[in-house]
Length: 385
Image (cartoon, rainbow, N blue to C red; front, side, top):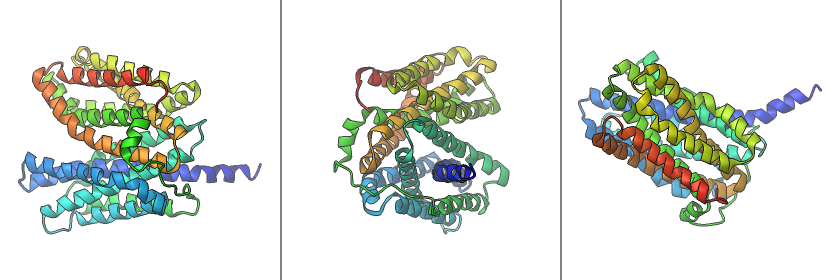
């Protein structure tokens, strides 16, 4: 009996270390995006330059993703993850001390490459190291803490302010803490393996549901963060209420991931669960126009909706972890990162066009159509990941 507790603790330490990397990924993105936007506004730059700087993150993602499977196969996921964490820490320190905001463009590109490498290495490592009996619950915990990191970024700015070195330095300390955890002797990475196929396009055909759910998540996350507050303002909400609505929605993704992951591990029918979650997300979005006029209805609806919607990604990626391993698993994640980059570009434009077409119902209809189209995939692709 005396040896069971230490053994259990040692088994949990690698999981907790990798989950912490997911949270640091969310914190870095959630802090840097609004911080750099407000800093450019302080310098007198307009929305076009702000958008161009934001796009550099996506360029970094699209630039590094095709090479990550071979890097992981050559150096191993632990070395790639440590280099990514180190690059993130150095880049964060450089932002407030470089002499001109024009240096932020290459720094933002490097930050996009480094943080995407963090995400793919940590999530694929965790997925591969997790048993089928609790894989969805573990990935749900990873997703929940990553969402917590996204939410913690703006909170940190309100606590320490957005001027000077302080926000960058605090975020760097958290990154270095994650670096220390990954460096610990309990972190035994999976044996480096090269993928079975040389091109990422092959993995799109092997895991179409995972690729499409990532595209959907990126589209709607980028669209909702930009346009949900505007939608609420158009429907008569105050600015404070509209901001709170976005926070409540994100809170649903944080709180509901672990219990939904626990449920998914016990249902043992991921295809039916994906269809159910997709149908619920579609119908829930159609309820937005009816609920938005009453905050007492809108807050719980968006809380539950985003929790169910975010679970689509958790369930899909747990299926990927049960069907792929080694270099193939890293390649699937690299393909999903390309989908994420494309979705984050396309989502805001499509949502903006929908709202321009119908300010009262355009955004909910866009969200419902996107969720509905995705739900058709697990209906027709019965034996695909």
